Image (tube, rainbow, N blue to C red; front, side, top):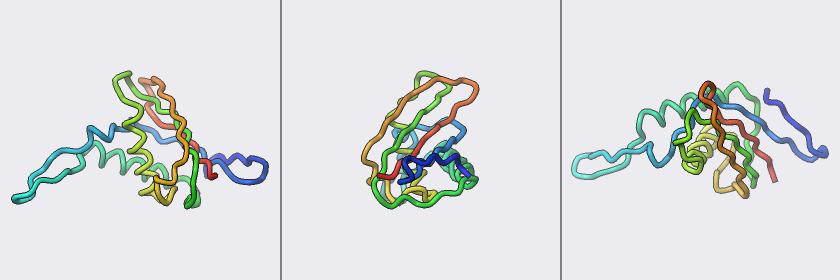
Length: 130
């Protein structure tokens, strides 16, 4: 179970930690040829991260947030080259895929901070229902 914090008894803040380096969405697709058509395909690093994310989220007990929410995230990268904004979409897509949120278009506010941790890359985030 995640460490829930009650605010005025009105709602819960879900706090989570997911280990690993969040990939950049813009660098996770490649153009592939499908017969006489072209399309976009996920690269292996995105599949690997999604699988790890879903596995780690399965340890938590949470209810899907169907309405609007605020998203607070701290991203710990192993180096300074990574772009914070490109990782946000991957994380929100993973949250939707695992059923923590119904739709990432319900995100009303995002507070994001980039950190450096070479030894323990991870994301730490809160989802605050509004």
